[in-house]
Length: 455
Image (cartoon, rainbow, N blue to C red; front, side, top):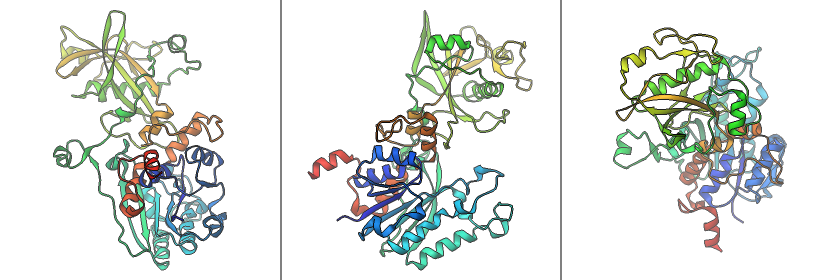
């Protein structure tokens, strides 16, 4: 007759996974309107009661059967609060999904309520007749929401937290509201990780941030951008290959220039390339596809946490094969590095002119790796795979995302969408350990060994 844990979850169920990491068992009740989300959740949490319905239609008394609720976790749809929606109109009923937390507070009285959303959630207010947030009433609805929780007897606090500070290899920032009615204080978890260059990490008080480089599966081939479609198919067994768009080539060129050539310490992958009598290290970075703007090298190095994911696959791994350069004049190499069109119809340009498209295969420029000059002899590109994205979001190894509870395959696009919508599990684990320590298992203990110990 333990207290119930209820998760009104989002996406792939990251909060449920983090809660399980903290308490050593699955959540008792999981609620989502999306059958695909429920199917993925059920594959990973078979002992959970799954309610596939609109959150407003859930019969709370019937679902809980009168048992006490320790935790109610809420991750209402964030798209109509987020600034990422740009200039599109918002929908009032989607922005209002958070009000269901008040309904649970009134009926089931969870000891602790956690609500997770985008940072802009605290700006929640009425919309104009055209469907846009009214700047004159910014935050008005949010304040009403907080007051409604307080009228139900809850103390309420909120903060913005970053996943990388709690052990997830992503920089994702989210808004968290914690409310509790059991008289105990609200506790905000202390960061466990930090910037590798910070004093706290240097003296060993914090662990260094986990990095994007950790999540890359280096065994997956990265086809050369200079190979023809038929060559890529033959070399890598890839059935469908689309020609690279000119904007993609510009992103690659800008990224190579910023993250590899002009980087005094480029990321060197833990693998080497070998072809015939030639071999060498591989430099790499991540390109990010987010807008059509091509004069800015959107992307990142791999020695820092992954940038925020959304519901589409925005990340591509770019690799540069390096070969030791002999008798190199650095100034000459940099001045005469050429950018030419991928299709070979232009003769190129000097780098003291506005960028055109992509670099030549046989001569691009000088890369210094720990004081040793290298030249780039090839450039590869591939999109990240779902298992890399899930690892980047902080999901543990073995998490099931490619099939549902009946073994039916989940389309790749749906896998990626569920990942982008999910809460990094480390957020939930840290918050639950801080606020419900009496329900938690010792840190570092996995669920299966804990259950065996209890048995």
